[in-house]
Length: 166
Image (cartoon, rainbow, N blue to C red; front, side):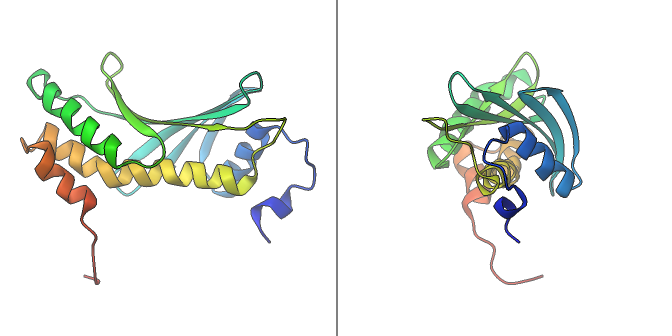
C-alpha cells in the first residue's frame, strides 16, 4: 500500500500527514501547534532535529533540519566558504549557519497553490531529502571546522561516490 492510500480524505491538514509519517517511522515527535511539528530523526552521523510548519496564508510547508555545530571563531570564514560551495551543489533546499544558536540548518519550502494539499509521498521525500543532505555534507563541515581542511578538499568527501562493499 502506498503512503497516499492510507489517507482517504483530501482535506487532511499537512501537519496531520507529517504526524502520521512520524508515527509510522517511530520518530520522536512533538506537535507544537496545529500548524507545526518537531521531530528527531536518527541519521548515521547524528540525530537531526526537524521542524515542519504549514502556512495556509502562503500555502507553504516549511522544513527546517538542524544539528549543533560550534566552530572555533577563526574557522568561521572557511565554514561560510564551504556553505557557499555546498549550496551550489544542492538542487533543493539550502544550508545556513545560525551563529547565535550554534546550529547548522537545512531549509526548504514546499510551495503549493490553489488550495493543494501535499501528498504523503511528497512530505516523505521532503524529510528524506533533508536528512540525506545533512548526512552527505556533515563530514565536509566537520573537516573544514575541525580538520583544518580547505573547503575544496572537504567537498571531495561529500561528492565522492562510494563503490563496492567493505
